[in-house]
Image 1 (tube, each protein chain N blue to C red):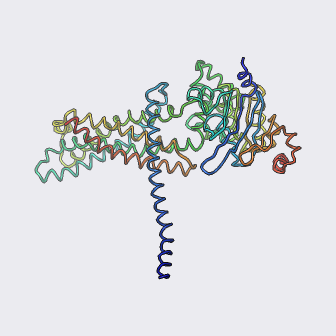
Image 2 (cartoon, chains in turn brown, orange):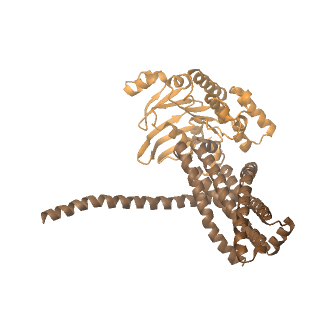
Image 3 (cartoon, rainbow over the protein chains, first blue to last red):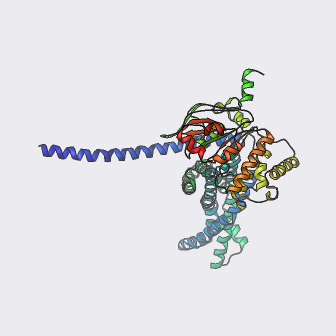
Length: 278
Length: 251
């Protein structure tokens, strides 16, 4: 009996610290999860205030539009072009099986305008711009450049954050247009190599069934992607701690979270577009 | 002028029983100090004794857990954002690594606060930036990027930027850290000259006791987050405290 009691006592003494550790870990995870959302909410409130009240940093906004828009353009166009080629090759085979090959231009144009163009743009910009902003603001934070800005009575939130987020919001739809055009054009090139068709005819067939509602809401939904990418990358960059290793962590978190939230937002936005533009 | 204004005039910087901790680590543990108008105070102490944290509390980049920091008679932690911004325009801050904006040229770095707060014409602003860069010996380097100049030069540019809004209080965080002895002397001389020329109140956080002896009117020694000694260099030399004599003796 006493041996059994000892064994039970021993088991309890081993199991309890382990269970306590697991509970402790779960508690810490939950705290950091809610803490992230709390801090992010506070950050968004400050951002809204910076958007709605002057002064505005117009010159820095222009610089950021150039940096985010112009420098992302080749990458976005290339990604859009690749999507157009792949769509053309994959869809041709499927449509041939159903004897609907003549629908190919419409399918390419419709898919690119409705979904592929916006999502590809969102993800490419999440990677390029999300990493860029996260790393830039992160290094500014750890090298005290942001403190220096505050010390000279310049609000870093207005100068660094609001301008970057607004530039992302403004540039995403324009970059999406570039991705759409590159995709449709390269879709035609890929199609033309398989079965010659004039650009005029391809466009006529492609855009015959496309309405304005098929083009405008999906293009404008990328403004929400821009808001997500800019806000998350700035948030992660601004709260960087821990030297260069910290900059690396913020950069990774910026890209991962921005891409993830863009995909999640897409689900909601597509549903909303279907409701409001049936 | 009432009593408060007069007090503010005489003591533009006042720290009263300030405590600050980061998690479990207590950094400042009841610090008290006053700095008179036109005075240069050197804050000395070993690494990790909260010297840089103290400077950040003075300019409102951080808030004390308890106690009061007054700059020009205003409780820094209680100020509204616009009041804090107005106060910061009257304070210049030279950061430990100069903290120059690395996407801007030397000239743009110095012009940055000016372009946002000055009502002068762009031409007048350019002239002022040029004058300041000349005064710190960087007149020929305005077009360079911070990455293209040495650490000592970056400190000079940082000093020019700290002076550009014509502050009446200057805060220096380790102005000579990581510099060779000749550049250290040059920067020290520059600080003394600028401080005397502009009649500024200055607080210099430093490890460099030799430099502090040269440019400070008064020295404060921090240990375990508290002021353990305060006085002129000569007064500290007479101290019986082993820590103080060890520190001062190294000069």
